[in-house]
Length: 197
Image (cartoon, one colour):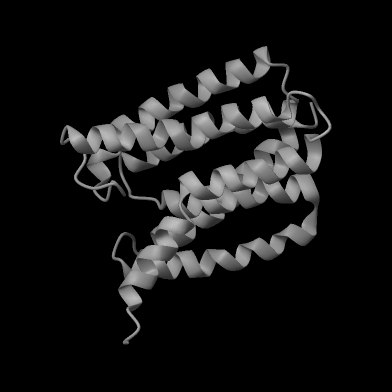
């Protein structure tokens, strides 16, 4: 059977997507750093709702009513509304995490997800940055901050995902590279400041 390169690229794009990578990173962070806390599963549940359930429900809903043309929201002009809604979702999640007494590191994830979504939204007005790459590397930055520099090996997934998004013609090289670099540097810098307060 002939190897289907396009199907392989699509598989990478779906597996290493924001709604998969985010929760995987957050589950690791919660179990690695907070598993002894009685409410650690509640905290993860809020993170999971905010970064997976809410975005997927929103995207499926918008696709059903014809507001977006595909589940990857390929067209830049269609990204404004879902991104704006997700800012609100993350801010609500942040407030809920505070009510649940979550550690500052965990509540900060949702706060800076909201902040960074605003950044992506503003960029999207003029340019199409790769949200896949931004999400991957910002999640890796959080894992590195929580568990240390050995977790930097996870950045090997960055060029693979870049290739996938470029091969599928979802982005060009600069859109993936900038998304990946800014995602890591922004989240890392924000959290170094956040946890130093």
